[in-house]
Length: 450
Image: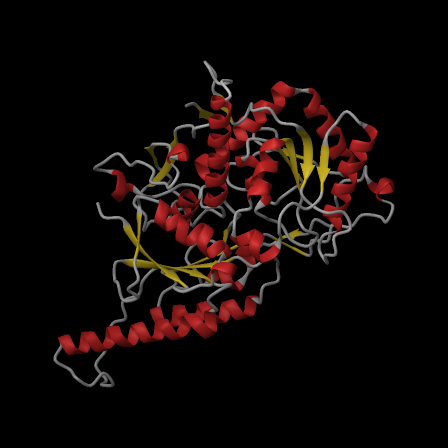
């Protein structure tokens, strides 16, 4: 069976600001055996995937949809022997699937603008069947606040976490196919490759020193000198970083109270454009030294790269609440959720003392990140996922796996597990999709040998 063709917009982008477009859309298509990227906007076998942050809906997308429809009409009329594309002959528009993905940080995101734009597409297609919409926005009015003397409120549960956006009551959901999909960031392949290279270099170094005879290196159990880290500078000049400031203050205070513990609470590497677009080796090295990585949301929105970065490093990740956590991520199973600053303090100390539990959770976290959140799986859920589910649970790739066993295609053979498809049925699934299929992966490689 032929892979699904995908036309990605924008086609041209600036590497310095490529971000999610490169990490998830382009890399996801390139690394999956189920996809083939096309550069032909008129390819009738292709679906379109649009990054709405870098390719504006009204200004950029609508004009090229209109141009394609005009070309369709012109070609159709020529086939009928009609040269005048402005004739009154009824010509049927041939719609195609369009996946609109909005990566912006926080709600509100100009909902009227998107309702108008999606409505224009639906009007041209004369159907709501072809347009899907995905966004990072799951809550609104989030405003995590700590008292100036944060010790006074450290036992209070985090409040002002915002209100869940009820998308089923929003106009936008009524004019798209299925539900508005809630997305979280996945695993960046450049970080995975960097970690892979660093561990292989370390193993080679040990071999040259004659220290690897009869031994292997497990990413989960490698020696780690840093007990706990939160990669955020205290009092960082940032409008939305006060919550993270308090988390860093706690980490530093734990270090003062426990001089035998090695803690880190500061920036490492470069933030913003460079940090989001290019892997930073110093940051990767620091992650591999951590027993526990603490992550926290911004004050006014949820979701960031840091959660998955911590998980693929093999550390135990402690996170504040998310609504919901990413697909397959569960509190107490593969991450630990802290609900107050005091709760964070207790859980850090507990898991530092209980190594067996810490390593078990870290291993589970690594596995779930690598099995379900690499960019290929991320894109497969986007295209083949169950759009009746808010997070896309269930994947329909029946036509691509009936006749052959699929191997994961990856630029990193170390992290390239063979995929064995297992079919399941879901009566609630979109009727246009033949069946649901959950792809179960063999455990990704965590053990290194020469």
